[in-house]
Image 1 (tube, protein in one colour):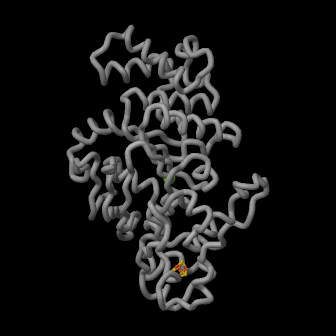
Image 2 (cartoon, helix red, strand yellow; image 1 turned 90 degrees about the vertical axis):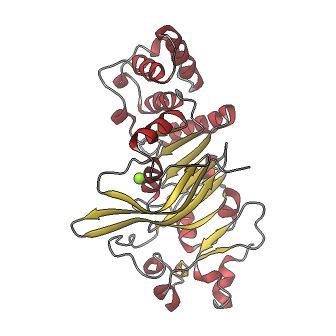
Length: 339
Ligand code: SF4
Ligand code: MG
C-alpha cells in the first residue's frame, strides 16, 4: 500500500555561533498505514530531531536544509505554520516523555480533554465529555468517569501518560509519534503503556512512530525498525530480521547492551564504549568508526552507502556498513552471515 508518511533525504541543521550542527543527515524512510515503526538510537543520534523536522516543530535555530517529508502525498516541508498546525491537530499527533510538561496543572484532565475536543469538532460540551469518557476507557484508566475530574498531579506517571495518549487520540490521528513515551516509567508500567499502544494500533488502525533509546522497547511492539546514529540511518528492516540477523556493528552493540529479550535475562550487559560523534564536525567516513571493533581504513575515508541484504523479503533489510561491500575481507564479512 502507499506510504502514509514518506521522508526523503531529510537534512536538518541547527545554526549556532560555533557553526552548523548537522543533526540529521540525509534520512529517508516511510511509514505505512497502520504499522509501528520503531526509531532507535542513543541520545543525540537525530531520532527526535527527524520527527520534529517532519512536524515543523524545530527550535528557531533549526532548519530543514534539504530533503522532504510527504504525508498522504502532501508535502509537509515548506508548509506554513498554520497549515502544519492543522495537520498536526487533525492527522498526526505526538506524545512526549514527560506528560506533565504538556498538561495544564490548573485544569482537570477532563476539562483539558473537552477543550481539545470542542476545538477540533463541532460538538457540544456534553457530547465532548461523553467522548472524553470513551477515550479514558479506551486507554484503560480505571474508574474513568470519576477520574475525569482529577487534576494532572493526582495521577501516577503511568496514568498521566495514558491521559496524554487519550489527549492525542482526540483528533483520531492516522499517525501517532511517541517520543520516549515510557522512558520515565518503571519497567512494569513501561510494559503496560507499550502494550496499550500496540492495542490501540490494532483497534484504531493508526500508524505509530515509536522513538526510543531502548531496543527492548522496540522488540515488544514494533513491526519495523530504523536504527539511527550520527544523524543517519544505520540499519533498517523488519524487527524480527534485525533482531535475529543484525547487519550493522552499531545494532549489534545495542543488542549486546540490553538484557536478552528472548531469554528474559535481567542483567545489564556491555554498553558500547566511546561516545557519539561531534555533529558540528561529523567525520567524513562512517560515523561509527571510532567505536567500531571492525573499522577498516576505508571506513575512516568514505561514507558507506546502505547495502541491501539479498534475501530478506518482502521487507527491505539494509545496513550502512562497508563490511557488506564485495571487497571487504571474507573473515569480516562472515560476521553478518545469517546463522
Ligand atoms: Fe564499522 Fe566500518 Fe561498518 Fe562503520 S563501515 S560500522 S566502521 S565496519
Ligand atoms: Mg530525544
